[in-house]
Image 1 (cartoon, rainbow, N blue to C red):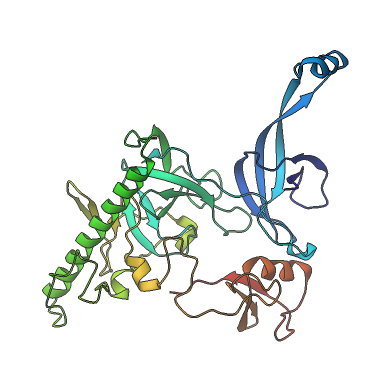
Image 2: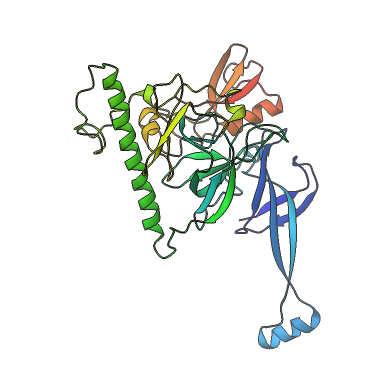
Length: 372
């Protein structure tokens, strides 16, 4: 409600430029973490302020008209969330879904990697060859690397994320996607039908992939695979999916791992009228190009939703510092670590030079953890 404080630098000690009112729309071009461990956003906003001169004020008193509006562009840095050290928590700025889905085309010759979550360390679920057109419904930034968080796009159909650029230093950070325009299949008078259709396509692709994976296992002589009749109905008689963990997480060798995300070239591929599949060398998995979104196979294995934020293991304990967020960071000291804090609080402890709140050892580093 108090708005967002815009400063001319990353640090909170930099000059205050403007306060953006509550409910204003911003364009975020960059996200990074400052020396205090706080996420900061580089924003561009168009502010409109009402100004009145003496003549217009007298007219307004007579007929409630005569106001003048002054528009100006504001650029600078704002915090993504309130500083927990202030005793308050909560978002200052939140990403919004696209009002109309957009079409993007893969422009990178080696194609684009589709992952289950916004972070580059999340499970790879597919590969989109060059020239593929994907429906995008949202945009966000990853938490890593901290000095240059990666801009990510969310596929339609309830999940799945791709990178806008390669995770490399300029000028090697080539564009992975180019904007085509608005998705012509979207009807603004029936938006729910569009998303329902996209999700149904995802389920269809997922079921087809399950059948193909089980046929592959049967060909390899796996005696445990007998019946394929339940595939397409969500799994076995009890409603569970017949998915092995190894069939979801592929052993893909990416150059410098996530530093070169979206730079993988598949060993072989083939396409059909409904979908395109890619077989990766050295892997039993068959990552699928999900044109409409993310098939839930990875969710079955990890126990998480499409957002990828929940652990498959019971985590009733909250952060020892803020007592409101789940523990999703590891405080590393030497060859050991403690899972005691949320990522924001752990970063702040490290930036302040504080010791581990559990064992009081000096903090060497902070990493974000993911259950596999």
